[in-house]
Image 1 (cartoon, rainbow, N blue to C red):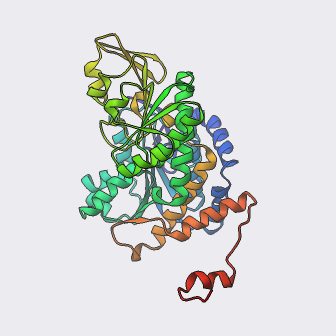
Image 2 (cartoon, rainbow, N blue to C red; image 1 turned 135 degrees about the vertical axis):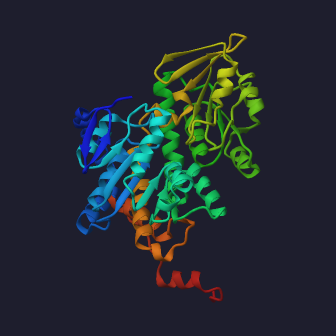
Image 3 (cartoon, rainbow, N blue to C red; image 1 turned 90 degrees about the vertical axis):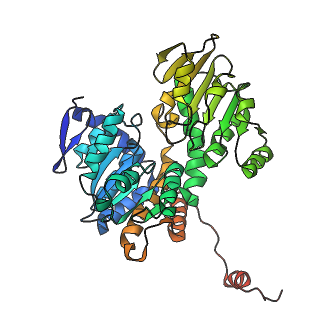
Length: 427
């Protein structure tokens, strides 16, 4: 496939259309106005230039909020390289604006699987010093195919639950060749991004795509982690009856206490109207479930990769398929039942929507920027392992958020501090 090329940052970006940049700049301006914490860091970084001389590779969903993170890293003095972590979440106008502003970008909306990997390799050919990854595809590629290059990388950060699972597996096998910060596991990430961000953006994507009412329908949510909690809470708020499927007995009990029904996917398949997978695992909805689903059942995925809903099984069972409208594919079963898959089974909130709200990503991307800086500045003290976000960074983002919102909280008095610090305090 031939694509227009745009010169950027002494390298050649591969983007769809450079003339789309004005629209992208407007989107970037909008999110900047709603990301005040990252804006504070942007101003500070611009003065201090803490990333001067460093090349940073970011494999992320390339839309406006992510774009502002990349601009913040560039303001810190970094040479920023970007490729897409999902072929359908790329916004070509934002990518054009980023390329125009001096960031090297290899990304096109709807790029093929071959192009996805080709663009990632081109980004790695820029020899980054550090990485911000989303799903750990870049890190995995380095460990499998570029070990000599990987050994020279300072470190990086990972955004997603799925990516951290992969990184911890590498760490366990002693295959990780540089330190990675598990940004997803920070309080200021999963309590807000995973829960409130996913909860709202998933339903934004489903509702704008289907234009159907949610109230009164039965929604099946596979997985009751923080993302699943958010999706379930919003479904309940819109009037749906919510069923949870789980493999974790503790989370299943938690879902029951939160007022939801819990059952197996085999049971849920028979009564669900809308299915949302949020597990990070493979084939969560598969052949035996498709065979039991009601006519007109709708399926969407909110996990990182498009493997949670088995597309091979769905295609094998279907006697015909067609695309009804953008992001809705119909699969007709032998008995005439029609099943619908949204956004090719990819992240429905980004492939069929605009992703998480700006105010939520303000927190996550502030954590990313500060964590990246931490791993670069502290490399000599870090082994080749997965690390949690340092507590001081988590708390700094929390306090900055309160600051920009004009909110103050109490502090411990010296008496209270002593009381909490000494087990033998006299009452």
